[in-house]
Amino acid sequence: SNFYIYWLLFGALLLRSVFAYFYKGFLTDTACFSAWASRIYSGGFADFYSPEVFTDYPPGYMYVLYIIGALQATFQMKYLSGASLLLLKLPAILCDLGAGYLIYRLASKRLTKGVSLALSAAYLFNPAVFINSSMWGQVDAVFTLTLLLMCMLLTEGKTIPAYYVFALGVLLKPQTLVFTPLLLYGIYEHVFAKGFNRKNFFINLFSGLGAI
Image 1 (spheres, rainbow, N blue to C red):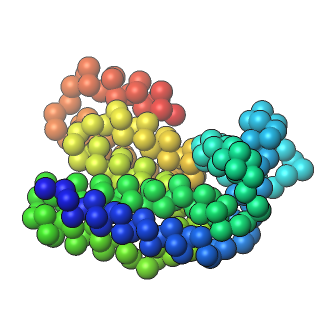
Image 2: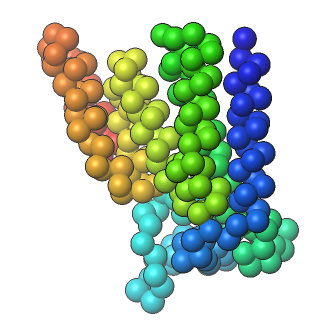
Image 3: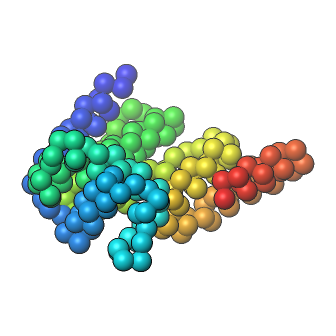
């Protein structure tokens, strides 16, 4: 029953990969990501942040760049070559696909398969989304996926996993904090609005503090 969504995701991946390979993107950022990946792999995590080096991302995405740096070194990729660019953009591309699949999954619970596919395609082939990750080389798709996952968890009443997904989003990109009201509304709805329970309140309180 999911045959068409898999083909849709494959088409989105293939098209993104082609553009990612041939477009250098916004060089200020792609050059930074490449340099950071090399630096964190060769120098380790402990010495990565330094006053002498421009590093304006929180540590969450540095773990992703460590893997990229390891692959670049293993396969001896040239600086900002086509293969290197594709590798740098791959996390955002995969998160695009993950968000497209989540949209399909959420929509298919309430709508027909055809409408759900159309909504997923509308996101996957939205020019702004497509250009941002595969051509421009930005990583907004990474924290966007965490936000979408958080919203999905909240709609299912799973507040505790939502706290930790939100915390992960903040560690990937601080712009996640802009969406704090969504999380607060989810807490209000599931902890207070549907009948206050002291045990449920303290479980959510300590889980939230743990995420912080």
